[in-house]
Length: 160
View 1 (cartoon, rainbow, N blue to C red):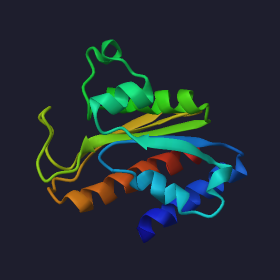
View 2 (view 1 turned 90 degrees about the vertical axis):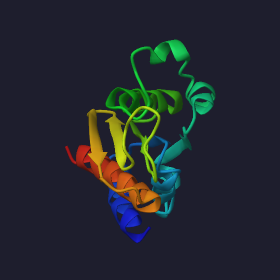
View 3 (view 1 turned 30 degrees about the vertical axis):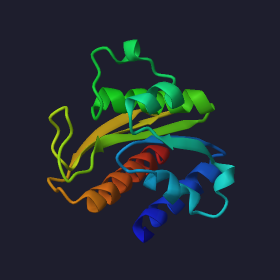
């Protein structure tokens, strides 16, 4: 987690300097993104909340994204990552929303994505979405890689 907290500290410094806030919706990282941001002292100045949106029920109840809003969108995709980032930002009225959705492993998901597949998005003054493919079935390593990539994506957009 040291690498994650190092990136999170950089994110925190930028958010605090800009007097901005963030909310996180994550899936296959299992809370690592939020935990990293919360590990930085002073997190209450910028972190407003988040959730592990791991199932359809969580998406419906916690994100208030009904099934009809998912028409043409599948989980673990760039459009879904964008939707999550926008929705968590709106629900918690933050400057930034960060999301991650994927297949950590050891097997792929029911949508045909291989283990090591993740999509992440930033919504805020800038918007960006990326896909990461690690080509690994190592669940813990993928979770770390996905969280690292999401935080790096956020940091890059905070620097713009």
